[in-house]
Length: 548
Image (tube, rainbow, N blue to C red):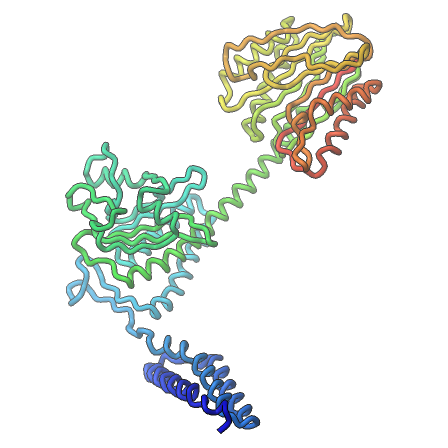
């Protein structure tokens, strides 16, 4: 005997034992009509065949024995699963028959039969979701349907569906069906009456800790609780019968690896407890339910996004139509402006109003936010200023009037920074006032200085009684006044560096000989070159006024 052959009988005996066990399992599976021919059989036979052929060329039995062992190991798990599968049919026993649950039917749900029936259930549930997807209140409709189906297939007495709110870090009740016993401590102000407790549960919210719903949502792990009095996560309220805890199933609703909510099922105290089979059914139905809910929420998000994009497009067109199409030629000055929005709806705007020969009004505004509310506030400010600009009042008085009007009308979370500059072309005199943070700079041609001449003050619309101040400025030929929104000064490049007032000063000084229009364009180009492809999160607007 060759040295290697003395070990041949070890794998041979092991292979023989495995093959015998495999044959027994296959025989049982065949008798119970559960077996199907699988590629595993062919793979196993090929292993045996390969072992036999190889052994024929190399007469060492150990190779043949090893291949037999591999073949047996391949086929053993398949045969074991087939042989051990429970073949009982779903047994529905009417009330009154032995083993029936009081007040309902009894399901003897078996794993393989459940898997088979769940395919039909899945088609039905997802079909309902598809049918309801575009209907008003689709999410409420589908949650009600799913809750009823959950009760039918698990024979729960009640169910509660809760969905996560990502923004508030809470989980909220979205649907309550049947008789659900609260597993949490009821608020002290809720009388222990069935209708008041049910009403309270319909609108309940829970944090993501210190309660069973939050625990299930954060752990993403289903729980079967048959002894609630021994589980410190379940709170037993008073001893009224309708508040006594029976048994519970809690299952997370997980779609695309993301927990979106929790389904909770309860059976009343005194009724048969939930079984492991009920638990298995509930978990599988929860997975199906999560897909349906996710389908509707994705559809709703797409519709909402589409509507928002349409609204943004309309709002953007309205906003751009309110800007001056071009800066008109005026005696004694040249003017330029540029406007760049970070999003479709912009909070910035500028305006030029020729009130009379001795008054030209320049306005630059920056309204907080980038939504329809911001646009409405901008339109209100624009309308107020255009209404009172022909009065003999000073810029500070007009800002004060506008502030009071906006305070009475606007959402207090929205306010505005305004630079209001009047120019008397006869006296070559400026009078200006500002509310908020929009800076006003002065370039003096005489000494080539560049200074900020405005003071930061309370924005328009924040406090009703804010008083704004006027400042006078006599300019000479070549002087330049520049005002801009803070989005220009704070614009970032790819390295996270701000554009800064110093860089603006440099561009103004380098181009001071140009007209107001050309100066504005040079600043625009420089900001664009500085920022490159960096995404900007604030709007950029600038007005440049040069004395001839």
